[in-house]
Length: 140
Image 1 (cartoon, one colour):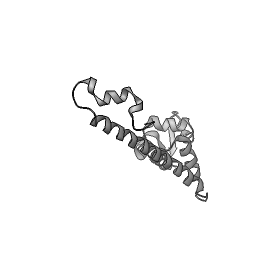
Image 2: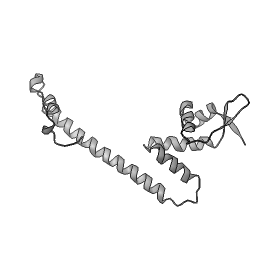
Image 3: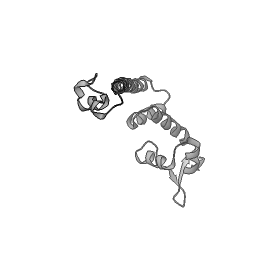
Image 4: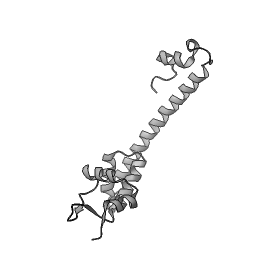
């Protein structure tokens, strides 16, 4: 088996060395072999798994979901229904966040529009922040 050091793996995968160690610690990566000098040595294909994990993190998947997706990816004969469900749940989270951000944007635009640029006593931003009942949305 062709084994590589952690520095090579970090460069090849785009994942920093402390993050690789963390992924080992939480079980996203199996414990590596060790050299006689106790240095970590990984199979080259670990870079592929790290790229998979990095991409999933970039898309906002939680560690538990990444663990399950990586396990599914390890057996290409698995049905993809669970992977689809995990991705749909992530999309729903994103849609909820987008709605919340849109409400925040709308509220901030309204606050800014009600600010006459005079004194703080007449400032729409301060007035609305002081009384949540004056907001357009209950939660944002």
